[in-house]
Amino acid sequence: SPSHRRREATRRNLLVRTIDAMATLAAIRPSDSRLGARLKVGGTQSGRIARKTVAAGAGRRTNSTRRGPVSIRAHASSSSPSITSAPDGSREADVLNALRNVIDPDFGEDIVNCGFVKDLRVSDAGDVTFTLELTTPACPVKEEFDRLSRQFVTALEWAKSCNVNMTAQPVTNDVPDAVEGLRGVRHIIAVSSCKGGVGKSTTSVNLAYTLRMMGAKVGIFDADVFGPSLPTMTSPEQAVLQMDKETGAITPTEYEGVGIVSFGFAGQGSAIMRGPMVSGLINQMLTTTAWGDLDYLIIDMPPGTGDVQLTICQVLPITAAVVVTTPQKLAFIDVEKGVRMFSKLRVPCVAVVENMSYFDGDDGKRYKPFGEGSGQRICDDYGVPNLFQMPIVPDLSACGDTGRPLVLVDPAGDVAGIYSAVAAKVVQEVAKLQAGPKGSLALDEEGVAGVDGALRVQLADEGGMPFYVRGCDVRRSDKSATADGESKKADFLMDGVTPVPDDIAPVEAHVVGNYAVQISWPDGFSQVATFAQIQALSRLPAGAKVGA
Image (cartoon, rainbow, N blue to C red):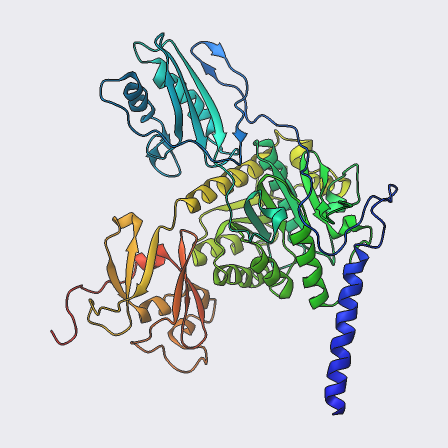
């Protein structure tokens, strides 16, 4: 039929345009030394990004001697087993008991029980050597671990010296075997706003370089092909992506020790193409780039919650997300959609960065020209554990325009200090995620509570002992429905007319990170319920089965 032929013609035209977009990246021969090698479709992992090790932090004084910065050696090979016990009365047992005084602030456990202590050796002369294998080279308390470990071990009566080797856990991830270039990437962090012009790229770049200065190996992927920012915000010497002649793998360009991939470095500026073409282009760049061994890959997400965003979340096993917003309610509306998208895809949001929050006037007063509350509301409604408010500072945007991020220009400044706090929390929250969720939620299939639609909840904060709540109470507690003028919206189904029934039960529920549960309801509503929110609900008595 004519309509069928038109649909086929449209489909063929779209396919041709997609192929043309892919061919753009392979337009120049690999041997072209003037512009560097472009990309071609397909290919596997090739070489690695060469980087020099950067020591992290400042030295501390221990036993009246000044030590240099503590550096951590990351490795990708299998590690030796943790040492958690030794024969009673042995010197090794004395060392372990001393190290139990060093507490990890994230896990609330001592470093011995955390499994950090490895390769413990004690010589007859009293020289102690051991390894602390941390969760990441960018651990923000690594220097404190080093200092306290030496302090407690050298306090032993027989101990003559103490040597601490710092390493990081082997690289492990859930990347499919087919995506060879990402096999060495430990964690993938998405920086998202779902709204343009709120400073998302500024946050991505400064976060990446802060993590680098903390000692981590870092890469940045600019996923916005319509308006790539990295060519403006960074100044690599080789400003064009290169391709391996034999394998076709993309080699990231590099600036100040951070690997960078952006469509803007493909020599084509910004793209003009339809959504499906963009998704295919992003998928190609993600799956054919040889990142090498990275501790963190920062994804500078494009605005919105469409095909491109879903492609990224489906192709990559994203570890966590950082949400960027501004104080206005208008920004909150869009950012909220992004938080819901991440929750539905089981990607935990670990921090909110609220840009342009305030400025301090010459009169000593703090002014908030764009209002306040958007960032705090995201944290309150969705249980995001950390909020950082960035001041309005002309140097922040000026440094971005000149191609050198502010944290590199003024690493000791106040803004760099805030970014350091953001980076530290990202590292800490990711470490917590590795320890597993703080709770679980499931249907009371055994009827323990004796109420239809009851849910069985277990929280680590309460020792894992189960308790029961009504599904309707969880649904009605949804905070996203309590916007101004909509205080009763949570009491109704999606049609806005039918009240939430007392026996409503979820279709499915999945834990998001270690702070919330994403719940799908029969009417199509997707809810993000935090464990703190569920913990505050009225509880049902257990043991009163129906008919008893």
